[in-house]
Length: 239
Image (cartoon, rainbow, N blue to C red; front, side, top):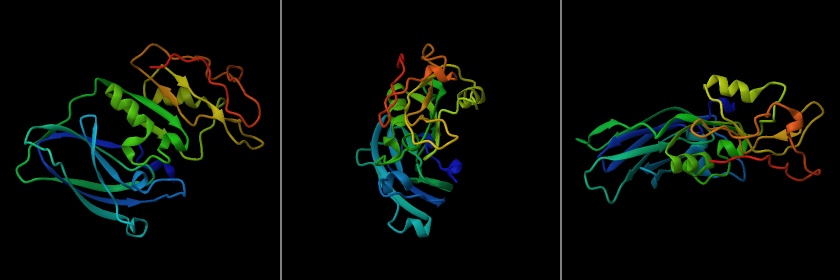
């Protein structure tokens, strides 16, 4: 169900258009009482690193599953701008299109300063749970700050520290990444579950020296706090 949600998906291009028309067809829409309508099902638009406008879905989107929205940049002066449109966090996007003004120019976006992506692996917060709009989840904020590509592997309600399965190593090998940092928190566990979550992510950062701990696959490398409290944060050289 969650694997096709488009959290972290985005489209980037350069245009001089003042007006943008979006049509989107959605499926598998998920809405919880503590989540935000626009963050779950909406698209938002940035020029460069600056938020500008949102494509807001109608109130009946859960039943309709498709919508159109038009936004206009009031200060557009005809010059080219880098446009980023972020996709919803909690639904599948079966298809969408973006229309521009007649006669507008369009070209490919420049590469990120750090093109090789950071990969975020986590639970609901990583997927974008409770974010007011797609561009407000923490991965988007970090990667706009550093002009960095990223991949969101957040899966709400899931993600333990699957030590035996070497999930971190699998993610790293799939994306040809090496450096690693982990942030742990206490997680409700069953009989056969590892009582550790990665709610804020296993973060692979290719563009800095290795983050620690490097012994992420060793149970003894995890510092447990008292029952009911957050797990101790392992020493980490952050970005």
